Image 1 (cartoon, one colour):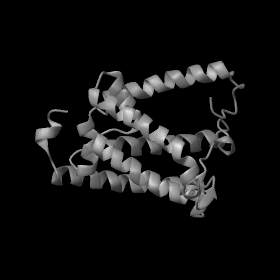
Image 2 (tube, helix red, strand yellow):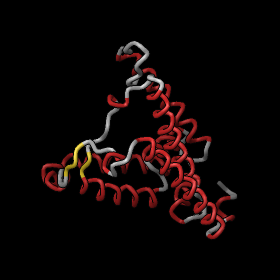
Image 3 (cartoon, helix red, strand yellow):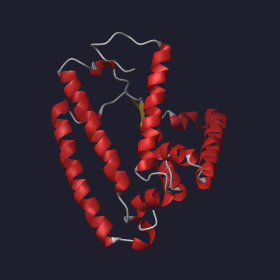
Image 4 (cartoon, one colour):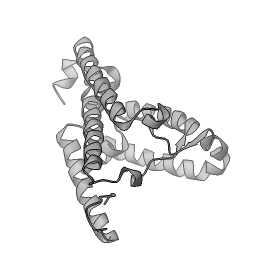
Length: 200
Protein backbone atom coordinates (compact mmCIF):
# COMPACT_ATOMS: atom_id res chain seq x y z
CA UNK A 1 0.00 0.00 0.00
CA UNK A 2 2.22 2.77 -1.24
CA UNK A 3 6.04 2.85 -1.45
CA UNK A 4 6.72 2.51 2.30
CA UNK A 5 10.47 1.93 2.42
CA UNK A 6 10.78 0.31 5.84
CA UNK A 7 8.08 -2.34 5.37
CA UNK A 8 8.02 -5.48 3.26
CA UNK A 9 5.90 -5.47 0.13
CA UNK A 10 2.25 -6.29 0.77
CA UNK A 11 0.37 -8.87 -1.25
CA UNK A 12 -2.29 -7.77 -3.73
CA UNK A 13 -5.04 -8.99 -1.40
CA UNK A 14 -3.62 -7.06 1.55
CA UNK A 15 -3.31 -3.96 -0.61
CA UNK A 16 -6.97 -4.20 -1.58
CA UNK A 17 -8.05 -4.79 2.01
CA UNK A 18 -6.10 -1.75 3.25
CA UNK A 19 -7.54 0.36 0.42
CA UNK A 20 -11.05 -0.85 1.31
CA UNK A 21 -10.61 0.08 4.98
CA UNK A 22 -9.16 3.50 4.11
CA UNK A 23 -12.02 4.07 1.68
CA UNK A 24 -14.64 3.30 4.31
CA UNK A 25 -12.88 5.60 6.76
CA UNK A 26 -12.69 8.37 4.18
CA UNK A 27 -16.37 8.02 3.31
CA UNK A 28 -17.33 8.06 6.99
CA UNK A 29 -15.28 11.22 7.52
CA UNK A 30 -16.96 12.89 4.53
CA UNK A 31 -20.41 12.06 5.82
CA UNK A 32 -19.61 13.21 9.36
CA UNK A 33 -18.25 16.49 7.98
CA UNK A 34 -21.61 17.11 6.29
CA UNK A 35 -20.39 16.47 2.76
CA UNK A 36 -23.40 14.26 2.05
CA UNK A 37 -25.43 17.48 1.82
CA UNK A 38 -25.57 18.92 -1.69
CA UNK A 39 -26.44 22.32 -0.24
CA UNK A 40 -23.20 22.43 1.74
CA UNK A 41 -21.17 21.52 -1.34
CA UNK A 42 -22.95 23.97 -3.62
CA UNK A 43 -22.41 26.61 -0.93
CA UNK A 44 -18.73 26.64 -1.87
CA UNK A 45 -19.58 28.15 -5.25
CA UNK A 46 -22.04 30.66 -3.80
CA UNK A 47 -19.74 31.67 -0.95
CA UNK A 48 -22.04 30.99 2.01
CA UNK A 49 -20.31 27.78 3.12
CA UNK A 50 -16.61 27.21 2.44
CA UNK A 51 -16.23 23.98 4.43
CA UNK A 52 -15.22 22.10 1.27
CA UNK A 53 -12.33 24.47 0.61
CA UNK A 54 -11.13 24.29 4.21
CA UNK A 55 -11.32 20.52 4.54
CA UNK A 56 -9.71 19.61 1.24
CA UNK A 57 -7.04 22.31 1.48
CA UNK A 58 -6.23 21.05 4.99
CA UNK A 59 -6.08 17.46 3.71
CA UNK A 60 -3.70 18.50 0.93
CA UNK A 61 -1.42 20.35 3.36
CA UNK A 62 -1.38 17.46 5.85
CA UNK A 63 -0.63 14.94 3.10
CA UNK A 64 2.10 17.11 1.60
CA UNK A 65 3.81 17.90 4.90
CA UNK A 66 3.42 14.31 6.08
CA UNK A 67 4.97 12.90 2.91
CA UNK A 68 7.88 15.34 3.18
CA UNK A 69 8.59 14.27 6.77
CA UNK A 70 8.22 10.57 5.93
CA UNK A 71 10.65 11.02 3.06
CA UNK A 72 13.12 12.88 5.29
CA UNK A 73 13.08 10.05 7.85
CA UNK A 74 13.40 7.38 5.16
CA UNK A 75 9.91 5.97 5.56
CA UNK A 76 8.61 6.93 2.12
CA UNK A 77 10.33 6.89 -1.26
CA UNK A 78 8.80 9.85 -3.09
CA UNK A 79 10.45 8.75 -6.33
CA UNK A 80 8.05 5.79 -6.37
CA UNK A 81 4.90 7.86 -5.81
CA UNK A 82 2.70 7.85 -8.90
CA UNK A 83 2.33 11.21 -10.66
CA UNK A 84 -0.57 11.66 -13.08
CA UNK A 85 0.18 12.33 -16.72
CA UNK A 86 -0.56 15.96 -17.58
CA UNK A 87 -2.53 16.92 -20.68
CA UNK A 88 -3.24 20.65 -20.71
CA UNK A 89 -6.36 20.58 -22.91
CA UNK A 90 -7.89 17.66 -21.01
CA UNK A 91 -7.16 19.30 -17.65
CA UNK A 92 -8.88 22.55 -18.64
CA UNK A 93 -11.90 21.01 -20.36
CA UNK A 94 -12.30 18.29 -17.74
CA UNK A 95 -12.03 20.87 -14.95
CA UNK A 96 -14.77 22.99 -16.49
CA UNK A 97 -17.07 19.97 -16.96
CA UNK A 98 -16.47 18.65 -13.45
CA UNK A 99 -16.88 22.10 -11.92
CA UNK A 100 -20.18 22.58 -13.73
CA UNK A 101 -21.36 19.14 -12.61
CA UNK A 102 -20.24 19.90 -9.06
CA UNK A 103 -22.24 23.11 -8.74
CA UNK A 104 -25.33 21.78 -10.56
CA UNK A 105 -25.42 18.41 -8.81
CA UNK A 106 -24.03 19.50 -5.46
CA UNK A 107 -21.60 16.58 -5.31
CA UNK A 108 -18.21 15.44 -6.50
CA UNK A 109 -17.70 11.71 -7.21
CA UNK A 110 -16.47 10.94 -3.68
CA UNK A 111 -19.14 12.89 -1.83
CA UNK A 112 -21.77 11.52 -4.21
CA UNK A 113 -20.90 7.96 -3.17
CA UNK A 114 -20.91 9.05 0.48
CA UNK A 115 -24.38 10.58 0.12
CA UNK A 116 -25.66 7.53 -1.79
CA UNK A 117 -24.49 5.26 1.03
CA UNK A 118 -26.94 6.95 3.42
CA UNK A 119 -29.81 6.83 0.95
CA UNK A 120 -29.82 10.28 -0.67
CA UNK A 121 -31.99 10.06 -3.80
CA UNK A 122 -30.37 13.09 -5.46
CA UNK A 123 -27.00 11.37 -5.07
CA UNK A 124 -28.37 8.30 -6.86
CA UNK A 125 -29.22 10.38 -9.93
CA UNK A 126 -25.88 12.15 -9.69
CA UNK A 127 -23.98 8.84 -9.71
CA UNK A 128 -26.11 7.54 -12.59
CA UNK A 129 -25.27 10.72 -14.48
CA UNK A 130 -21.60 10.08 -13.80
CA UNK A 131 -21.85 6.55 -15.20
CA UNK A 132 -23.67 7.92 -18.26
CA UNK A 133 -20.92 10.49 -18.76
CA UNK A 134 -18.19 7.85 -18.43
CA UNK A 135 -20.01 5.62 -20.94
CA UNK A 136 -20.40 8.52 -23.37
CA UNK A 137 -16.73 9.43 -23.00
CA UNK A 138 -15.61 5.85 -23.67
CA UNK A 139 -17.86 5.45 -26.71
CA UNK A 140 -16.83 8.75 -28.29
CA UNK A 141 -13.14 8.57 -27.34
CA UNK A 142 -11.91 7.73 -30.88
CA UNK A 143 -13.51 10.98 -32.04
CA UNK A 144 -12.18 13.17 -29.23
CA UNK A 145 -8.81 11.45 -28.76
CA UNK A 146 -6.80 14.18 -30.56
CA UNK A 147 -8.27 16.80 -28.22
CA UNK A 148 -7.95 14.59 -25.14
CA UNK A 149 -4.27 13.96 -25.79
CA UNK A 150 -3.40 17.49 -26.91
CA UNK A 151 -0.59 19.45 -25.21
CA UNK A 152 0.92 16.46 -23.40
CA UNK A 153 3.44 17.44 -20.72
CA UNK A 154 4.15 14.10 -19.02
CA UNK A 155 4.10 13.37 -15.28
CA UNK A 156 4.75 16.95 -14.19
CA UNK A 157 5.12 18.03 -10.56
CA UNK A 158 4.11 21.62 -9.81
CA UNK A 159 7.23 22.40 -7.81
CA UNK A 160 9.44 21.13 -10.65
CA UNK A 161 7.51 23.18 -13.22
CA UNK A 162 8.05 26.26 -11.03
CA UNK A 163 11.70 25.31 -10.41
CA UNK A 164 11.15 25.19 -6.65
CA UNK A 165 12.44 22.70 -4.10
CA UNK A 166 9.77 20.54 -2.41
CA UNK A 167 10.38 22.32 0.91
CA UNK A 168 9.93 25.81 -0.55
CA UNK A 169 6.83 24.75 -2.45
CA UNK A 170 5.34 23.23 0.70
CA UNK A 171 5.95 26.46 2.63
CA UNK A 172 4.38 28.58 -0.12
CA UNK A 173 1.35 26.28 -0.26
CA UNK A 174 0.87 26.62 3.50
CA UNK A 175 0.99 30.41 3.17
CA UNK A 176 -1.53 30.21 0.32
CA UNK A 177 -3.78 28.01 2.48
CA UNK A 178 -3.72 30.54 5.33
CA UNK A 179 -4.68 33.31 2.90
CA UNK A 180 -7.44 31.18 1.37
CA UNK A 181 -8.83 30.35 4.81
CA UNK A 182 -8.94 34.06 5.65
CA UNK A 183 -10.70 34.86 2.37
CA UNK A 184 -13.11 31.97 2.97
CA UNK A 185 -14.09 33.40 6.35
CA UNK A 186 -14.69 36.81 4.75
CA UNK A 187 -16.81 35.22 2.02
CA UNK A 188 -18.99 33.35 4.52
CA UNK A 189 -19.74 36.60 6.33
CA UNK A 190 -20.39 38.49 3.09
CA UNK A 191 -22.62 35.86 1.45
CA UNK A 192 -24.18 34.42 4.62
CA UNK A 193 -27.32 32.33 4.06
CA UNK A 194 -28.56 31.28 7.53
CA UNK A 195 -31.82 30.05 5.97
CA UNK A 196 -29.76 27.34 4.23
CA UNK A 197 -26.84 26.66 6.57
CA UNK A 198 -29.04 26.27 9.64
CA UNK A 199 -30.79 23.33 7.97
CA UNK A 200 -27.63 21.52 6.87
